[in-house]
Length: 140
Image (cartoon, rainbow, N blue to C red; front, top):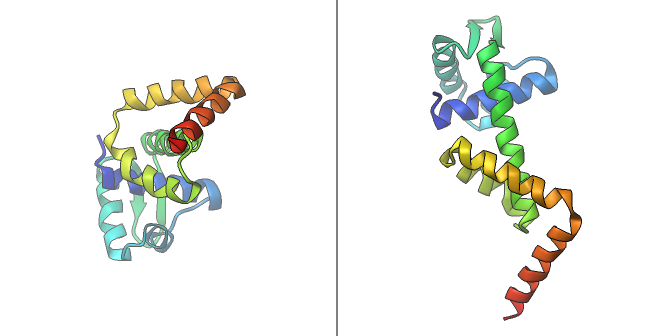
């Protein structure tokens, strides 16, 4: 089970590889706003835990375990963004809010949020009804 910090690295590595086809230590450091030496230490740990294969000066590749974990972490992040958007959280607050909560929810809670997102997306009038309730509450 990866720690929240490991999850951040796996998620970012997964996104970089999906976007660019590769992930270098410098790219990861820039994306996470950390020092390259911190990235190297974490990458070595992730290699030891079999999330990726790292060869010094040659780069890294995600293992099947790393890809599966990365994909799931990206899904969790995107789902939480959708959820916060649906419930009316201000756009400029969504990313920071997701970063603040994503590591503190069980996968069962994530699955239930997924159900709720699906419930709202299936019928637009459900979102409209929620907005009406929110507007009414703000006026009181």
